[in-house]
Image 1 (cartoon, helix red, strand yellow):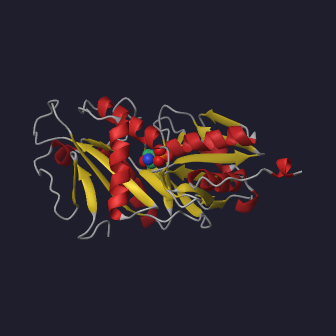
Image 2 (image 1 turned 180 degrees about the horizontal axis):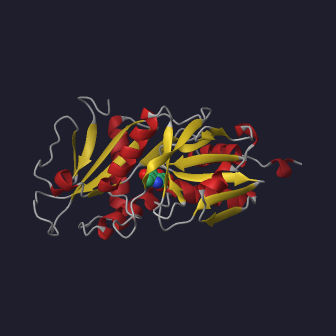
Image 3 (image 1 turned 90 degrees about the vertical axis):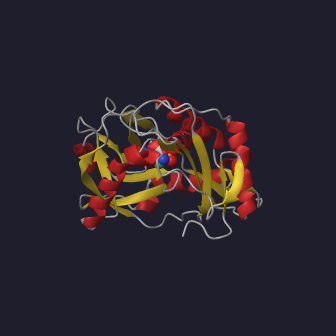
Amino acid sequence: MYYNNNTILFLDGKYVKAAEATMDLYSQSLHYGYSVFEGIRSYRTETGETKIFKPVEHFERLRISAESLNLPYPWHADELIKATYEVLAKNNFQNAYIRPVVYAPANMTFATNTVSHIVIEAWEMAPFLGDKLLRIVTSSFQRPNPKAFKIHAKAAGHYVNSILASQEAKAKGYDEALLLDMNDHIAEGPGANMFFEKNGVLYTPQAGNILAGITRATVLEICAAEGFTVIEGQFTMEDLRKADSAFYCGTAAEVIGWQSIDDTVFPLDWKDTKGAIIQQLYTHRVTEKQVVKKESLA
Ligand code: PMP
C-alpha cells in the first residue's frame, strides 16, 4: 500500500488527498512512457529531525532529466524542496521514499508540449539494515543504448528495460539482475549502480552508458574521505568473476552487498570488505551521525 484515504500529495502547486487526485488518461506520458521522475529518501536523523538526503542534487537531476526530454520545467529546486518537506510533515513521515514525477498533458502526437505537470508522492520506508546479501545474475537484456535514449535522464520509459531485466532474474530464482551495455561492458542494475573490489581496490563502471547515481557519487565521496582507491572504467564479466566482493548502491537500495554473480560466490566475507565499511559510513551520512575517528580519540 503506497497510500490510504488520509495520504496527502503535492500536485501542480496544491496539497491534495492521494485518493482523490486524478490525472488525464489521455496524457502523452501514459501512452508513450514519456515522463521523468526522481527517487529520493528522507531520514530521521540522530537528533530526531527529518532530513531529505541530497535534495538539491535530486531536484537538479529532475530538471536535467526533464530538459533532456524537452519537457517544460518551470520550477525551482527551492520551491520543490519546500513542497516535499510539506508533504512529509502533512503525512507525519520521517523515514520515507519520495517520488516526484514530471509528466505531459493529453497529446497523442509526438509534438513538444508547452506545459508539464508535477506530482510529489511519498510513502514510509524504513532505513535498510543491509545484512542480506544478493544473488545476482547477468541479464539477457542490455541497458538502453545512449544513442537511442538520453541515458543520463531518469525517464519513465527507460524502466521498461529495468522491469524486464528484474523480472527475468527473479523468474530464474535470483534476487536481482546485472545488465551489460551494448559493448558488453558491465553497466548497472535495473535500479542501482555497482562497485566491485579486487585486492583492496574498488572498481565501478564509468559514466556514459549508465545512470551515474547520486548514491554512487556519495560512495565516491566516502572513498575519497577514507583514502580508498576507486578506478572508474570499462570492465568485463571476466573482471567481475575474479573480484573479491561487489555491491549495489542506490537511493532505495542504499549500499547492499552481493553474495554471488551467476552462482560464483565472492570469496571475501562481506564484513571484511570495503563495501561493508562504506555501507556503515553511508548510514552515518544519511542519518547525520557524528562519528569520532579512532585516531582523534588519543
Ligand atoms: N541506475 C539506475 C538505472 C537507477 O534507476 C538508479 C536509481 N535511481 C540508480 C542507478 C542509482 O541512482 P541514485 O543513487 O541516484 O538513486
